Length: 178
Image (cartoon, rainbow, N blue to C red; front, top):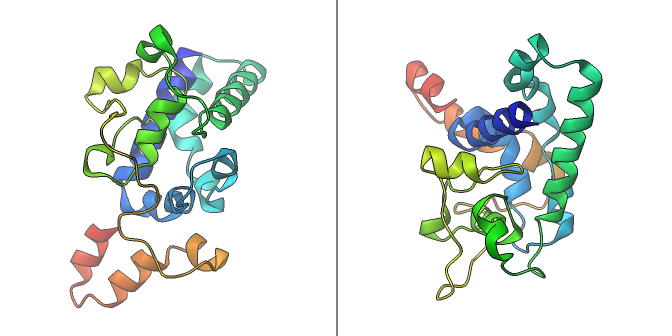
């Protein structure tokens, strides 16, 4: 359980910090409302690289156990995509809660690159990526720099990175963008 949750933390964090991964993950964050349906908005290309983060677990965790724990982790994450549930008391210190995940999906400056946890928020607390929801500031959802399209193919095909690379005259800089 801890290994899968730890691996998920790094997968999710890199999905925000590495442009190539963000290009597919931004589909999930492009929703300007926050509800259970947002959990289902996933980039289809993400599944082609996510296995890399779980690979070290293959040495220690039997496949059946891995699959069960991964599915439980993903089911838990469906539950945190809601505005209906507010704070959960002492559980806020240990678990990723809807309150923590609202911060993660916010485009407010204090929300950017925060709260990557799957189930346990301890990883964010440990690695300095934790931020609590503020009572005095309403969270705005969606991308900081949104793309002007509701076309599902354009949101999936990494058009932002491709257009940035094509508009760049220096090949080496294009590789840095990725």
